[in-house]
Image (cartoon, rainbow, N blue to C red):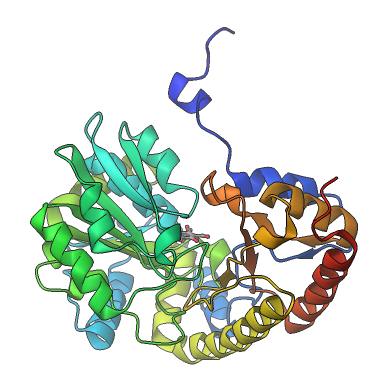
Length: 389
Ligand SMILES: Cc1ncc(COP(=O)(O)O)c(C=O)c1O
């Protein structure tokens, strides 16, 4: 077989997180602060709703758009919580996690060589999926602005071929989020240049210091935004694979066309469980959030005491400390920490090749694990700090 793989796919780099975690596989007694998923299991009543739906014999396909009951529940949730309204019939699609949703948006809107702005460091999928859809990712480095996109920097990166902006907040990997005022200023620039905003708000419920504000709530933004959210993080439902997209009906219709040919629909069991999550899961979300917040204080204080520069994350469950004063680059730091102290963290370079002075630490791990990890990182620094091998 010759030239069997498409050039586009061949040139795609595998996820830096995966590449690093291949090293972890097979190692014993590793404390992993690497994976971006809750250490909690899905709250019991949500699991039970899934089990019960199977017992009741709900084993069929659903509407391509997703269970009507789930779309209604999402509509109610967004309306009650944020005053946001989307038609369950025309402006909403249930997807296989947020992962499917942004793939669908990108494939729905991109014509060859359209540009998509991606503030970095960012979640690993946006760039490769933009390229796969035929677009050009334009990465905007935010390091000098405390990892936040500013209106001024945004404006500088826009040209005639710029079609969309992907904004993820709270942000993976930095934990940074945006205040109402900051978002409002970004919205003004987006409106001025008629940019479509694709907002990945999957960590919205895990915002600690101020209220999360969905992007489409800003003046004029609703018609220019595809709002993405899902159940993976806030309800600890990563394995169920349920997300949703809300946006202008022509974009949702285009996304639904691709979705109906590739996926047909999300598993009915998972959709039933997601309905239960929205109906009764709020208390569990608040409990998990309280625990993440407690861990955030602990891990950021601990990292600062060890001498890392570490801003307090405002949301999600990640810290992105600078390791600059260790004299090691991110990959070397992560590999040696893993080998010598059995703690797995993700090198910052997984989120943009220039972030070699950072690591990502996920604090979605038990308090005991975090305590032990800090001790081990401390030991690592004592023996190795500043000594390149
Ligand atoms: C910012 C962000 N978006 C999307 C996802 C994927 O979410 P889902 O499980 O809903 O596909 C992740 C997972 O880590 C993420 O960090």
